[in-house]
Image (cartoon, rainbow, N blue to C red; front, side, top):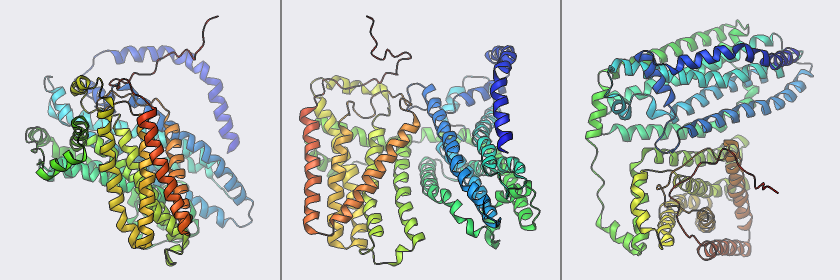
Length: 603
């Protein structure tokens, strides 16, 4: 298998030059054909296909494609790196005399591929949740053109299906080729059949999830009242995103379940990942009745979800335009500003400019669906990290011990406020870069000269009162209930000082009023961003929780730790306010130049 894989790769590399020369005229002809105007359905599909990744938060729409390409590159890199681990794993299994461990491990890994396909497709579809059906912007953009609503719906659905197909096929092609190759050995008979087996099961699992989520939103769109749909839709989207991110550690732990792969539980007919594992086994030559039954259920499930998605589109065909336009005209009245809230804000933030920025941030977050979704994603990541720690305790049996006496349990509990404070602060700091309405920043431009520090103080107050304080107050009952009132209070105090110090570090580079500057994503490669957040999570959540847990053993060490954390916060605040001087605030973020001089000067 390895020889075939290497020969195919070499032939591809050798023939790429000749193929490029042969296909050059065809590519030129295709470009000319695409540059021309064609039929209305074709142009509508082209419009939806090109504008699928557009967002009001991004100044340059092409930058979203860079981020999407970077995410795909991360997946490809992960596949190639994990292939080495799988090679060593199956090399050891092939040296065993008993083939049973090999086959159990292979089944667990095939189930992992299926679950990973469902997770990736579900995350992709959930992130694009508002774009699954034609929206208000689509109707306003196409209102002046001679197109029918039926054409808009058909074009939207086919373009959406094309995007989903590209995502599923692009992510499933490499694993279906690489992993059967690295699993080759004396126990791996007919692994060549696993190439189509993994690919087909991957694609079917991805399409099943995609059609299911489209059908879910279609049902909500037609059943939920018009005025309540935006709120319900955002709640469902946030819940799905949190559930998927929390399930990621469970998906990646599936290869460890190899010892259970010989079982044939009756509840397997209710577990979609096992359906598509049956498809993989049937294609690979397994004619066991249980596998055949699961494959039939998988085919029926995909067909049912596809029919449901199409039917919901047909159901929405007559009602969607009226509902969208009515929802735009029947916007809810702004929330009532209570008198005690206004007085409390005046007392907490006496400076009027700081109070203006504070109120602007709060109202912008309350009105922007995309900002709240991104903040929900950061909170879901924190919840996933916390759940992973407690799931590990459940698997290891540490849950049965006394919480205070179990170091792993104490660290998991201490990590709760640390994880939420890290990702809440990092999420808000990232959201501050995303614009809401750039044309509305003129009032801050007028008041900015000479008052930059007072304006930025509003952002600091918002992080304190709407991020640090809520995290401390909401997690305090958890700490007291699980660790006792004395240890719980000390833990929360240490976590509060740590969160305030982290806030000062994040605000150190802030030179803009939140939501008022243009934004160009993709300046850092996605892999670099993932590494940064991974290191920050390991050091701040994992490392600091261990330090706090160890210091709780002695009152002297506890007081010393609290003193160090408080001193670090005050030093960081002093450095930010007095050492670093901000001359002008930033209202426009410029894209990186195409050619950088790298500080090279002529002699």
